[in-house]
Image (cartoon, rainbow, N blue to C red; front, side):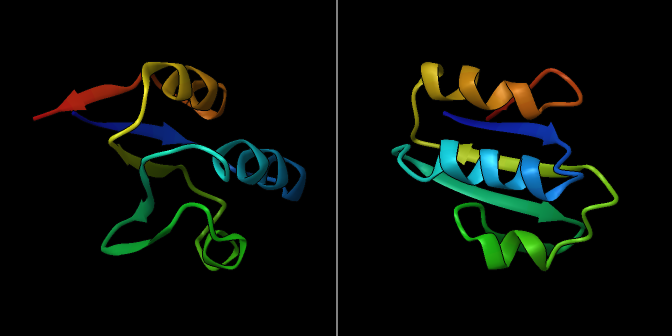
Length: 82
């Protein structure tokens, strides 16, 4: 199952909390903006994104519990992709 969350990481404090939450999670996480994609666990990758806009967090191979934790950064409910 893969899931996409629309998230907003508008401040450095939010980025630090997001990175702390995601760093120990099992699964694959990628942040996307347009055609640009970075590893979501990489602070340098996150900081290279345009943080003035919402980002897509693509998730695969993780648990529903992890998705629930990450939903606090959502700007919309997540949707499952096939």
